[in-house]
Structures are given as structure tokens and as C-alpha cells.
Length: 82
Image (cartoon, rainbow, N blue to C red; front, side, top):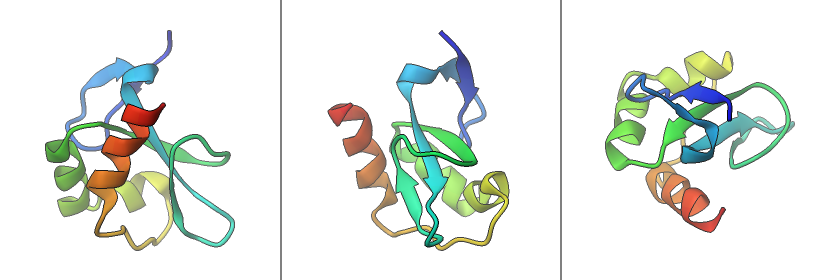
């Protein structure tokens, strides 16, 4: 299985243990599988909070983007549901 790096903690993990984030055509953050440039997060609140504090998500996606305030809940739900 391929490994990916978490944008929060920087740990490499199997892709199935991470949640993918990407930007849609409207410029909104998409949690889960979608096409285009993406980044990955562990499904842990600490990783989401760290990635938001360090602005790692916009940097890795290479675009200015507003990170939603409910990102932690969306990331946890995405991994639980899929």
C-alpha cells in the first residue's frame, strides 16, 4: 500500500489511515477523495490543529484557501465513514 505524509505531524503512514484534502473548482476545501492536488491528514484532532496553526494545508495545496472551522469534525467523520 502506498504511504503518504500527514500535513500536521509529518509522519508517514499507509494511505488508508489518512484523510485526503483537496480543492474543488470553486476553490473550496474538499475532505475525502477528489481529483487535483491534494494533501493528507491523520484523523487526529492534534494533527488537524497543527496543520491549521502552521498554515500547512494552503501551503501544500499551493493555493490561498480558507480552512473551515469544522475541519476536525469533517476529517474524523471522513475516516470513520470510509
